[in-house]
Length: 90
Image (cartoon, rainbow, N blue to C red; front, side, top):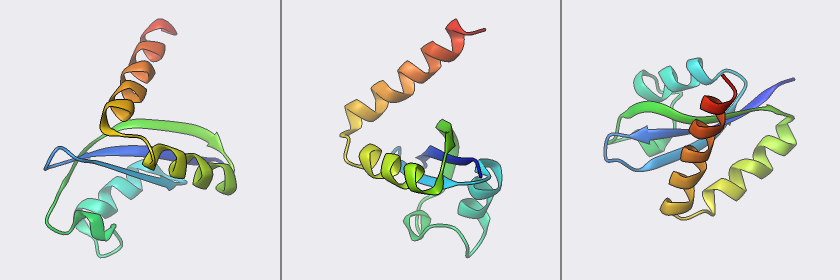
């Protein structure tokens, strides 16, 4: 199955990284459901700022872990590179 790795910008301008099979559904769960991550207690998800597709469950978990180890500047660079790549491929 196709798993996604995603980054959400939170209301305190922090980044949350997670994995799912359905990014839109998961984003909604984080904002309005008890199924959302505890990370969003006291914070709100603003928008999905990054996503990768084409992962297995295992590779998505490994990629999530590697992104979580990045510092803020490195995560911002990852997001910027993704935007640039998307723009160039249009």
